[in-house]
Structures are given as C-alpha cells and as structure tokens.
Length: 286
Image (cartoon, rainbow, N blue to C red):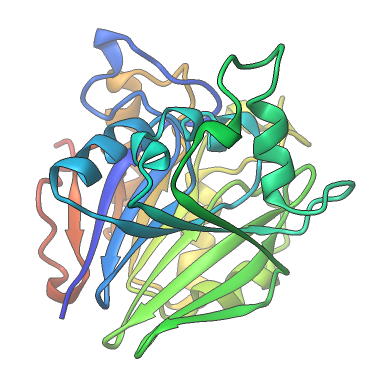
C-alpha cells in the first residue's frame, strides 16, 4: 500500500526562476500523488516538465491528470510534458466543464496552435483521453481509491479534489477566494476531517484587501476552514511570485504559530500520507 504526495510546483500566477525563491520553489502548480497503484497528477503548471522527466526515468507509463481549472499557470507545463510525446504512454485528463468549450481537449489544442505555440497537440503520440466532470462528481479510480470533487470560488470556476485511500485523505483546494465573514460550505464539506489540506494562501490579509475579486485567499482563512472542518494539517500553497524565501519563511512561521498543523509547500518535498505526522523534508522556520 502506498499513498505519497510529491510537490513539483508550488508557485501561483507566474514561475519564478530566481535565487531568492529556491527554498520554496518557483514552478507553478503541479503535484504528483502515488496511491493505490495509480499515479495521479494535480494540475499541469511548469512543475509538470520535471515531473515528466521523472516519469521517463522511472518508467511510469500511465497517469491521471486532474485539473483544477484551465488558467495559464495551471496548464503551461502541458506542452513540455515529454511522456505526452511517447506512444507507449497513456494519460487520462479530467477537468470541469468549461463554458464555450466541448472539453479540456479543445482548450489544450487551442493553446498549442499558431500563433501561440509552434508544436500542435496532434504531435503528441501518447494515448490521451479527455473527460469532463462536474463539481460534486466522485471518481472511483481503483479499489479503495476515491476522488471527490467540490466547487471553488474562482473567476471562470475551479474544482477542488479530495483523494481518499486506506483511511487517509488529502485535499487540493486551489484556486479559490473566500468571502470575509462567511466560511465556504463547499470547501468545508470537501475537507471535513482531512489529514492534509493544500489551500490557496496566495495573499496576506493586507494584500487581499487590495485584490478582492482576483480569485485567491489567505492562510488566515485557511486556518478558519481547518478548525471548522476538524482537518489536521494545512499546507500553504500557490505562493505569490512577490513572496521570496524570506517572505515565505515569515508567513509560514506566523501560520504555524496560529495553527500548529500549518506548513508551506516546497518543491521536492514528499509527504507519506500513510505515516503521518512524520513528514519527509519539511522544516518550519524557527
């Protein structure tokens, strides 16, 4: 039995290739979940490129990609996913129904057409399947492996995921914006009693005040949701490009003081969900 979560991209909005961002990482949203004999991928940001190289090295030949939504920072790694060009690789892609598009395949095809990109999606030789889902759907991907979904508050819509296996639960809740003074009931249902919740903590409270309507949240709201839902560990995610390592360490420290189960996502870190609370590689700044 295996249930491991590896962070390949933790940054929001825009990738950051700066020395000042190396501790936490600069690639945009991408998480690998190895669970129940399956490989799941959460979002296809720029972290998907190094993940793809890892798949080739480790001879991983099939995966399921679960997209939260189709904004650029969550799909801009897709054209650079090397296994997608290999005929012996298979990839099932799930995404919410998108207004004006038949499926996510149409969106990705458009993104890889001229004048936006020189190599069309038809160049990919992998077996790629596209599936629409509605927020609230449940996916039974393997015996004992269940993925639940929930609606998030984001411009154009987004979907959160809850992965359950062997009595453990991991939630992926990004991109979403809170309404001050109102806990999001969709999120509360999705994260109830969860072991680890990855939550959109793009802004500080001060920053959020000038960015209402942009579709993102704060660690403070994440703590309120965790406490109300009885969830255990809050993983700060979708780090703002302007938050360098110094800023992230301060944010992580403040969040951990308020909620002892809080930590910030770092590229390269692996969580062993079946052996919590031991967390490989995580060091909260003192």
